[in-house]
Image (cartoon, rainbow, N blue to C red; front, side):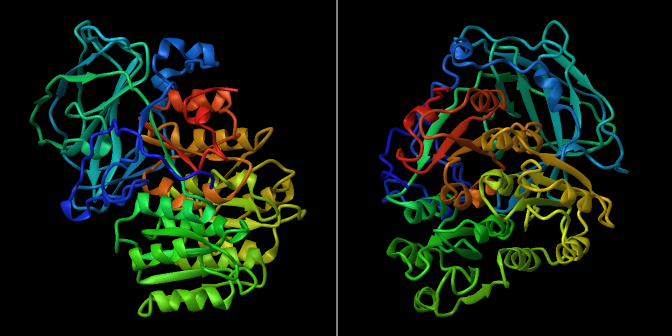
Amino acid sequence: MGEALVPKPDLCSMHLLTSARAPNHERSDVTLSRFARLTLPLVAAALIVPLAAAPAAGLERPESDVDSLNSTGVSVELEPSSDGDSVSRVSGPAPELNAAAAGTVTGRVLVTPIGGGSPVPATSGATLVRFWLSVGGVYQQQGTTTTFDSDGDFSVEGLPAGTYRIEVLSFDGGAPGKAFYLDEEFWVDADEIAFNEGAGTNLPTITVDPITIATGRIAGADRYATSVAISQSLMAAGEADVVYLVNGLGYADALSAGPAAGISNGVVLLTRPDQLPSVVATELARLDPARVVIAGGTSAIGSRVVNSVRSILPTADIDRIAGADRYATSRAIVADAWPEGATVVGIATGRNFPDALALGAAVGSTSGPVVLVDGARSSLDSTTRSFLTNLAPASVAIAGGPVGVSNGIQQGLNGLSSSPSVQRFGGDDRYETARLINDAFFSELAPDYAFIATGAGFADALAGGPLAIGYGAPIHLSTQRCLDAETANDIVFSFVREVYALGGTAVLSNRVINGSAC
C-alpha cells in the first residue's frame, strides 16, 4: 500500500547460504531469497542510535534485564540452515536427555561500551550466555549462565555432549547487545561447536557490540503489490510449495491462511474478488508453486480469478477451501494444513480483525494455526468444540478481551478434553493487545528481526504473516504517524537488529521506523 519502495544504501552485508538462491538484483524494491538474511534497503534508525537518547523518546530499560530471558516459553524461531532447510530454535529448557555429559565449558565475554572504546568484561546479572543444543535438527536451549568473574570469564558444567550454537545477550555496554559464537551478529551465521563426552572446552573470547537497529520498508503501489513485495522478500523463484490466494478486500479468510502458508513453505497473495491483478499474476508465474489454495467461496474469489490462475499455472493443483461461512472456512483451512493436530492454537473473533493481526505470526512461530470463532456468542459452539478436540492443543492463545471473544467461549476452551493452558491477551486497544501477544511469544527468544504494520488496516499485516513466521519475528502494530512509546521500548530491548515496515508511507510514515514515539 502507498508509495513504491525507494532504494537506500544497504548497511547489512549480504550472506547467501547457497548461490543458487541468490537474489535478483535487477529489482529495486526487494530481494528474492528467504534463504539469505533479509537484505532489503536499510538505513540506520534512531530507535537506538545513540541509546543514551532513548529515554527522551519514552524508552525505559526493563527492570528484569536479561533474567527475563532465562525462563521457559513456547516460542519457536525459524532460521535458514546451511542446506536451505528451516532450523527451529525452541525457547525454554530441553527435555530430559540421556546423553553423556560433556566436560566443563569455559569462556570469556567482553562487551563494547556504547559510543565505542575498549571492550570491558561482562558482569554477572547483566550478561547472559545461552547454549542451544542441536537435537534432531531443532536447537533447544539446554543451559545458561549469568555468572562472570572480574575478567568476564564463565564456567558451565553438566551440558550434554553434542553440537551447539552459543548466544550472548548483554546490557553491560549500556545498551542491548547480542552476539553468536564466534563473533557473529545473526543466528543464521552462528558457528556450531561440538562439546565431546567428558572433555572440557575452552571457548575463544566472544565480544559483544551494542546493537544498532537498521530499518527497511517492504512496499508496493497498493495492497496487492505490497503482498507481492512481501512474497518476493521471502521466496526465491520457484521455491514456494504453496500460494494461498485471499480476497484483498476482506480479512476473514486470510486470518487462518497466513499461518497455514507460513508452516507450509508458502506465501499469501491478495487478489480482487473478480479479477487477478497483473502484478499478482506475474508473481504467481515467478513462484511457480505446485499448489494454489483459493481461500474462501466464490463470493470471496470468483471463477474468473481461478481461471486466470489455471492459465498461468496449468500443471499446479488448484484447490478451493471454503465453508458455509468464515468460521467453517477457517476450520477447513486449518484441517487441511494441520491434519495431525497442533500443540498451540490461536483463537480470534471472525467479526473484526484488529486483535488478530499479531496473532498469526505469533502462533505460526510455534507452527500453530489461528481458528476463528464468533466471539459474540455466549459459549463455544459444538462444531468448533469438536474441531478443537481433534486438534488437541496443549496451549490456546485468545486474541482480545471479552468484548472480542466472550468469557463463555474462554470457559469452553478451558473445558477441552486436551486440558489446554488457555491464556487471553487483551489490551486496552489493538496496539496493546499486539504488545501482549508479542511479549508472550517472542520476548524470550531475542529475535533478530521485527516487522511493523498498520493497526488501522488488515492487508499488510496478514500478507506479512508468512514472512514473519519464516524469520521467527513478531509483527508490531503502529499508527500511521508514529510508534507508541511502549512498542518502541519493546523493539529496542528485545535485541532486534533489523526492523521492516510493511506497506508504504501512506500507511506507515518514515517517522514510525525512525523510532519517533508518540
